[in-house]
Image: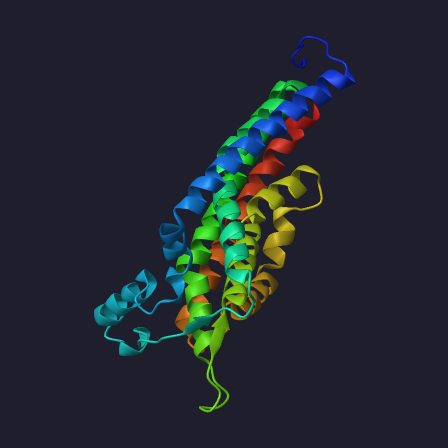
Length: 272
């Protein structure tokens, strides 16, 4: 029979005080790293604005692939998109918000550690083991989704939408706020999409999802994935669509494998 850790008995106010200390340490770490990011403005925005340039690394990769497979159409033409600001304080506010996001992202491992350290004494031994795995893999998958969006999905989406014209008489001038809002929204969306294996494991543990159900509706899932991929990257070439859809399909297959393993272990857990 598994027992919880028996820390020194604490009152509700003791727990509240400990939570206050944890939140204070988290706030200090985030603010300090935010200030560091704020001071390195040029380096920070060189990274944030890099995907809008025609010499971004993903385009160099496509050109190399085009040379390797003898398909010149894969190599995108050089393009230029003008970035403007239309509000008086928008650039300063953007600098502050981006610095905060950067500080929070850099501090996120410490934030997760502090929160887990606060709640772990209340967990059983097997709950702590599962919690460490879920939190670790969830964080890894979220960051993977964010990086995939930054290096692949957002640059291709931005290039298509920012250079699309209904008429040559209408010139595109993208506002800084529009660029930042789209980048942050897509990063968050792809990070959540990459949590599919974790959510599938959780639903399987709760008995809401089975591997048989996921296999039975695999074709439907493929159609949904292609639709989501087309929405995320509204470009005209099939190659770009596949570059987005294939990772999502692999996540679905990984989720089936995870759910199947969870089902095999479920009976042994019921007797615990």
